[in-house]
Length: 611
Image 1 (tube, rainbow, N blue to C red):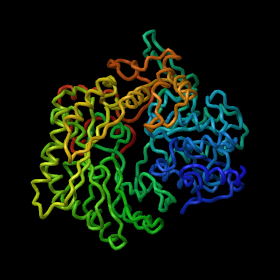
Image 2: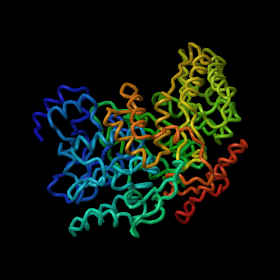
Image 3: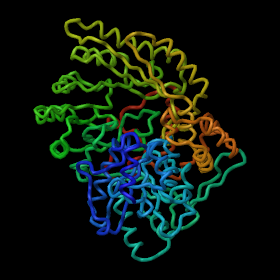
């Protein structure tokens, strides 16, 4: 690549640091000294991708191998894409600025369904055939992983391999196989068939899908003996022994989560019925307190960050959280390192944590009641109460906080107007709790932010059979809340229901959506999760051109015996368990935390001693 031309172009675009590389702690190797080159591709802009913990882990893990160089590539923003196409510059990595078409692998992480058009756009910018069937010997293998990989069917035409579950052990096995295959001179399809034998690797082209006349799936079956009937996710059993980076890249520019992320544990035992992550990341596995303190010491020393996020699905459920917070504050308060807990549960958040966390400086407090009434919280198995919220925010206001964020969902199964009104009542409860604190104690300037997202039924959840509310109904509910939340102390934010609709389409979609995705991309769809670039008209035209009714995927109720597009994937939790939980939801019955009493979800099948 012409480095002078690239430097000139970067001077003409916004945020050139997105494309520069050379950050502190970036890994540098000589490409001529390695056998395998791996491009870790995040299908969004740099500041979003560099905030992703999975990228930090796998980037440094892969680079521990002497035979492999892992480099990073992000989706160029629209101004950079325009300059790249004008000047015939191929998509390049940050580390060496080499074209990704030269690499052995391009690994995309699938965090969000609305990033799919960016995947096509990045492949096109790289000069790599979009469809897997069109790639020949010498082309990189395109692999995808992450939470959306549990239903990768809409991307089946475009990816060569899918990694299911946690990647720390799987990626090493895949790279070992690739090194042997590369030396053997065998065919491309031979590598894919061998890779399909690695537990957790799914090769879509090795499976055939048949459909019924009404559009539902008739069968999903392997077309070769090399592929298993079902693909089981991979999990890491021992969190203290598995790799975790002791240094991470420190960007030159602000990113979404610009701080140390200390992963306390994986999995969640609460069983919220709308939450895909809480199901697919089971079972719960904690890191030892001493290991966390060791990692914290090394990361603070190697990065210089002044904020540390205690990261997990429900961080306040960590069994040694109180002692961890106490020791972290003792060790790092003199360094002015602040702590934040990004995912707080109202029923387990103690006043003592608030007081410890504010010793350095206040980081925001965010809570997620999810639903406005106790009835609906029981339906979704969100085991928190109105009293939990009142007590927690009162403690926060007494401890000096004056800004609270509350997250809710609208369109949840069985939702009524009373449930919507309950959201407004809980917001006003927070305001009232503030003014009930003595004026001499509380901080001035109350701000309560209420954010609502639209419910999206996700695979491997008890609500995977449920329809999403139509767009017009979601808009009505948003307008209802706009009126009900009018207060100078309350700010209301909401998600675009059209984006949520498309998210639902692709979350539960099948392979027929591949052509829709391709058509929409050709019509200019990219950065679909960004409001200023979202083109609903282009999407609806793409559905029409391919004779696909998107409502079939988003707004249709599934029956118990229907074959779902992801039924050949084993995420650990059984379909029978999910159906049982759905029936309990309809009755408003809750399910205990499985650390209190085993719920029989099925994940214990994955190995002894996991639960």
